[in-house]
Length: 148
Image (cartoon, rainbow, N blue to C red; front, side, top):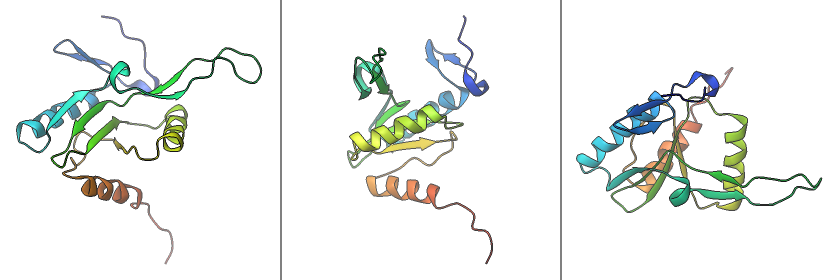
């Protein structure tokens, strides 16, 4: 089976007929499925553009008259926490400029949507909305401070 070469050498994988963009996604999906089996999540599913895609940009032509495509953000996974919070999760080994642009557009258009970005299959699985926000906050506050 032929796959288009990915940026940054991510290796696409097919498991049980399901195509994933990287090995990290395959492992993370297994971890999330185990959390469902253990009762830590209500459900988990792969996100699709038709069901979960968030339209970010829909202008037929730009200011110069060039034709434009619609821009969507589609997370890797959608799951529900025990407190009924819906989580959109994206596995990213490296954040690309396009991904950063989509995140800024998403924050501006839909400020109430929270995206959980993971870099490892072992990233913690949130148990509530407050726990999710705490995990995200801790991930941002781990920057090293130089000097005193």
